[in-house]
Amino acid sequence: MNEREDLHDIRRAVQALCADFPGEYWREKDRERAYPGEFVDALTRAGFLAALIPEEFGGSGLKLDAAAVIMEEIQAAGCNGASAHAQMYIMNTLLRYGSAEQKAQYLPGIASGELRLQAFGVSEPTSGTDTLSLRTVAVRDGDSYVVNGQKIWTSRVEHSDLMLLLARTAPRDQVKSKTEGLSIFLVDLREVQGKGLTIKPIRTMMNHSTTEVFFDDMRIPASSLIGEEGKGFRYILSGMNAERILIAAECVGDAKWFIQKATVYAKDRSVFSRPIGQNQGVQFPIARCYAQMRAAELMVHHAARVYDEGGNPGEEANMAKLLASEASWAAADMCVQTHGGFGFAEEYDVERKFREARLYTVAPISTNLILSYLAEHVLGLPRSY
Ligand SMILES: Cc1cc2nc3c(=O)[nH]c(=O)nc-3n(C[C@H](O)[C@H](O)[C@H](O)COP(=O)(O)OP(=O)(O)OC[C@H]3O[C@@H](n4cnc5c(N)ncnc54)[C@H](O)[C@@H]3O)c2cc1C
Image (cartoon, rainbow, N blue to C red):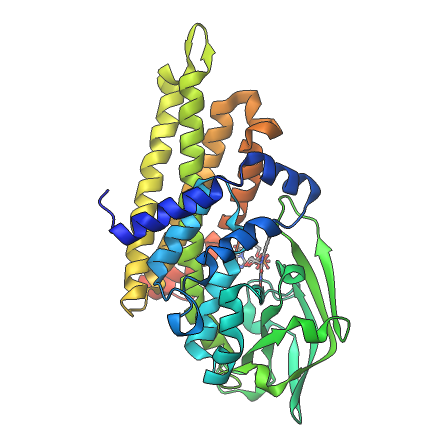
């Protein structure tokens, strides 16, 4: 593939950085359910997590295609970008809708690594995918908003200084359209720890630093509001296209890792006096996963291009996420099968990556919801919910 030279250079640089974080590092973090702070610091120091921040604020001012390449290479190297990916995709909301003061206040610190913007509070236990039914409220009181409610699956919040929070600022029955009345806040977590904010970790299938977050009369300055009050859902939606493209790029990276790992093993493992990879029953699943991954990869590049050219990549971003998450999960399953019993042994890293890859047909948006988007918004089929 002839890739632009700048993107190729980024790939090489990310590969070099990831080489310092081999399987043993991730296995230990996984065993202890510990946050890979050293890895996130290294990414930050190298400037990768500031890729999307404009140069005037200390970032590299790159486009989404470069951010996608960074996330893909992290996964393809066997590392886990979930420890840091939110900064890339949350950034869009701050860049597009934040005020000049908010950008000047936060972006240089985020670019230098002094501040981490790694937490995104959208999901709630009762509303699930039906975001418009969320119940967390933010009520204006003088120069503040007072926040009450609960979020779930708020990942990395214990390792972040800032959180992007979606909350209701107008009751649902008092707004013209159901998409109005939600607002986005940039919450400085350092100011509210122990003052109305409680965080409860959730132990999950893989090491993901995810939590439940409770707001009990949590007071935040009115200046935390991003953009206009009541328009938060629209802002979040536009950010979600970037998020889906970046997650899809991570899935392509995962699929590459599984395919490479299976290919090497299939050449090396000898059973019945010949390499298992000589059997077409072993070759074909690997080849099929390769084709599936390449198709998804093309869609990811296409979606990133539409996004970077200023178009609306709703269709492409959703398809990229759908195809890439299915390609990575198929490759994960194939890789375990190719390894036989050794696919279950911790030291091969296959079972860890398998558990990590399982997430992406569910989060940040599940496959069914993507299919219903395509059915309704692209194909014009009747709305189902
Ligand atoms: C490890 C992890 C980390 C996460 N990190 C974050 C985070 O940082 N911030 C955040 O805000 N959220 C986060 N999430 C939440 C994630 O985005 C949601 O779990 C995901 O969007 C699915 O929502 P849900 O779990 O409420 O499922 P539900 O909405 O309860 O859906 C359950 C199942 O029903 C299906 N379903 C629901 N409605 C329909 C329908 N109308 N038609 C067809 N099928 C339907 C869904 O496809 C899904 O398979 C995380 C989740 C996990 C597991």
